[in-house]
Amino acid sequence: MTAAGEPGSRPTSSPPHAAGAGPRGARGVLQRMDKGQLRHVVAVGSGKGGVGKSSVTALLAAELRRRGRTVGILDADITGPSIPKLLGMTGPLTDRGEGIEPAISRTGIPVVSSQFMVEDEQTPVIWRGPLVTRLITQFFGGVHWGALDYLLIDMPPGTSDVPLTVFQTIPIDGMVFVLTPQDLAALIVKKAMNMARDLHVPLLGLVENMGFLVCPHCGERIELFGRGRVEAIAGEYGVPFLGRVPVDPRMSGLSDAGDLPEFHSPDTEALASRLEESVEAQAKARPMTL
Ligand SMILES: Nc1ncnc2c1ncn2[C@@H]1O[C@H](COP(=O)(O)OP(=O)(O)O)[C@@H](O)[C@H]1O
Ligand SMILES: [Mg+2]
Image 1: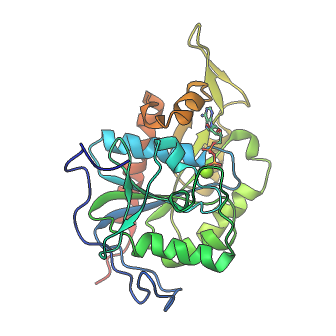
Image 2: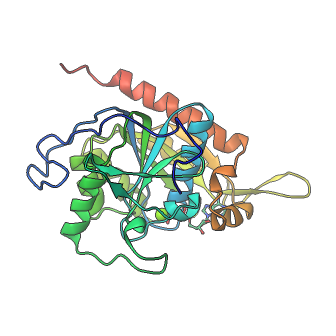
């Protein structure tokens, strides 16, 4: 997809400059890069894959745009990229000398993803760790993001090298965790949250995915695993509970068609408004530095 037909939806200003680590430079890799004109940088993570992290990232982006915000997505799941598919994008990424130009979705969301760097959807990204971590750095500091209200980062799952690189090099405001109620027994969720906390990354909130479904006949909410378990974990960690996304068969059809941003309900709307509240509260809580 290109920005054609969507004038004004594309960021036009200069890229955020990497402090110490230029787009190509590995120098100062453990130094956090500069935020440039990105107002808020929010990572979306999970303990493990398949919990709906990419779907929630795409839904949040769509809802933030409905609220009038400018939003981009950095797909940091280098070996399992799925944002392009959910938004119906094929790239390519271009570089006209000013930094990498993101691809723009049909609804005006700039995206960078490793998916745009392989021939087709079936080609796997098989890269060694150091290359993956370098690419993440470049996807942030080397991209012409322009001025955005939000840059959302779709994180790879777990506590490996890549999340560590993101935490250490990208100036993220905080992290949203997506979890399904049935994951709670698995300590991996808590491990991933503890990793963020240990690295002083604020936890902006938890999102419950696939905990209930709405009966298509009578509209009743059917709780699949009992209600309130994810909310209870949020309470335990002292982080906001951003809300719940139901299991909904329409989601797979829209995802296959690259139209996930069309999935829209009061539940998804609430996620974005609570995220904004949490981001603002976090910004106020942070001591001013000169
Ligand atoms: N709320 C939901 N209802 C129905 N299907 C969902 C929901 N959330 C995610 N899925 C499906 O589950 C699969 C995994 O979701 P994805 O967002 O790719 O997870 P992750 O990024 O955590 O690996 C996808 O096929 C997606 O369409
Ligand atoms: Mg994913």
